[in-house]
Image (cartoon, rainbow, N blue to C red; front, side, top):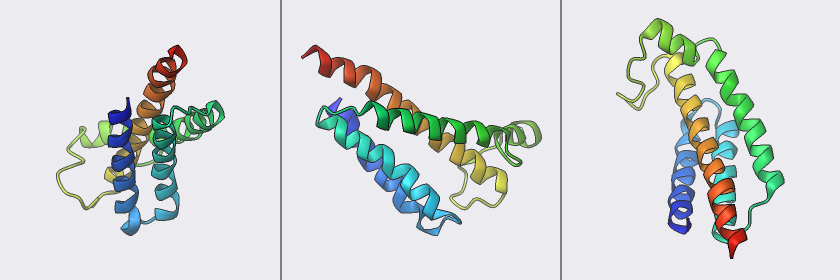
Length: 126
C-alpha cells in the first residue's frame, strides 16, 4: 500500500499542478490536493475516518452532479457518442471538460475507497 499511496500522491499533485490554466483552479487544485494529503497520511498508517467521509460525500455528490449537469457525462454519451475526451489536451467543447472532471472525481473516490478498506484493514491487523 505504501507504493500505491506514493504513486497517487504524485498523481494528485500533478493533477493539481496542471489546473493552473483551468477556468476554475481555485476549485480543482484543492480537490486534487485533498486526496494527496489522505494518501500521505495513509503512508503513515493514519486513516482519519471523518476526513474520508467528508471526501466521499463532497466528491461523490459532485460526481453525481457532473453526470447530470448540462454538458455532463450523459450529454457526452447521448449526443457525442462517447467520443474521445483525451485526443487533445485542450478541452475545445464544454462536455469534454465536464466529463474529464467527472472521471477525475471517480479516480479520487476509488483511491479513497481502496485506502479506507484495504489499507485500514492491513493497519488494524498489525
